Image (cartoon, rainbow over all chains, first blue to last red; front, side, top):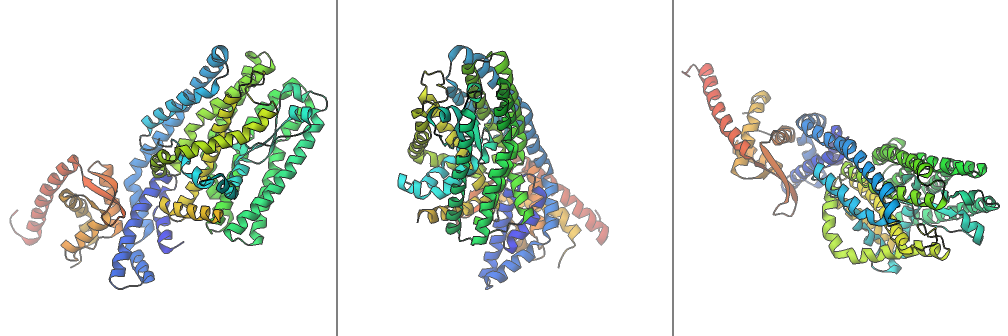
Length: 498
Length: 111
């Protein structure tokens, strides 16, 4: 970090709770300092002398920071009030509307067309948020720009760039094993399909069971499931080591540090497994009630998973940026990223878990097909409502400029993006289709395309959050300028294509 | 001659409003212009200017926008709002009266 960075960090320190405003002020002061340096250089000074002169002329950064804070207090209060309004007004309204729409309308009268409600629901939330936060609700499809960069121009490049997106999937993905498939086929399916928008806890690379009461109580399913868990855990560890090595070679990190990465992978997996012990309890109980317990606990563990995921991501990104891995730095960055999300998801997922229980008990009458429907409907409503915290987080992360610029990019690259989403959907969907395991078609009616669409959406959202974290972190770290962050991203990406 | 900071402090806002009423400008440009026009008598620094700019913007006297300068660099340009122009007229009048009064007091002339 240069002296100028230190100075800007100090001068804007009081704005640390409003990342967007902090970034804007830092950008303005940086432009001023750069002009000062250019003028000093024009007077014959060398680079170091010019920077020294500009920094000295700037004055006491703490004093300036205090004055700026005084001048912007009202503005900060307004912004905080807008955030609170979104949280207080829109979130409950969105949840209530989605609950009614999904549980009492679609499930009863239309059937399983839940995917379709994503479009109007997201649109409504987008418009409402735009109303409340006119300059910030441009999240839209912020991740679209990054996707083709990561995937490249061809499938071959996509696979060569796997070291970039595979960790994202490993971190934000969730390995699922379906017990009835194990029972029926003596095999298992690995899929990285979970959406962190719904479940940031899916962020921990853990093994989860898609449990249904018939499978849990099925004789022999338990043993197969445990074998499947162990096998998946081994697969996961192998992948983790491979990814760690690729990252190490790409970023020039010495082996000692790389081994720390492996430890992060392994520890996160172990913690994830530990958190998931409630699934074991559910199996051991082998009773219908265990399913409901599972669903509730499934909601409760997610914030912890999100925390672990973010911690891992921060460590990787700090290393890529050549920053120190000090405990304070890593933890503060982690909490900045995940702090707001943890609380929001804790509430949303907790409510979702309770609603599932309510619906299973009151509406579905313990019918397994109904149970699946309700379960997936609630997933979807969580996914939809989760857009709101994402918008808030993107504001906190100061990604407005990135979001605005994405519009142009999307127009030019939409076809490529759609192609890759389709590819992802097929990759994720076909194995399950082949196994007759398509969610939403558990009654045998085969709504595979709906299921594929949902998987595609999840796939996109999952990468989207990862991109947001990447961009936020690269933007925040050191430069405050997104353009610089883009340079770093491009550099990292180009290294991956070699 | 270098002025005391408490004397300079009260003049920053009207000067900024005046300079921006001529045309829109960015922070560094304002500092350079003030230092030039006062032939070094005023030595404004970032700590003088930016809090003032932000305060005036918060009061609705200025508006700002990021734009690309001729050099290709992104800069935050400030401009005076209608409310700001009215404020400038009021402050100019106030300053003239104040200056006249202080001069009279200090120099013994008739106010």
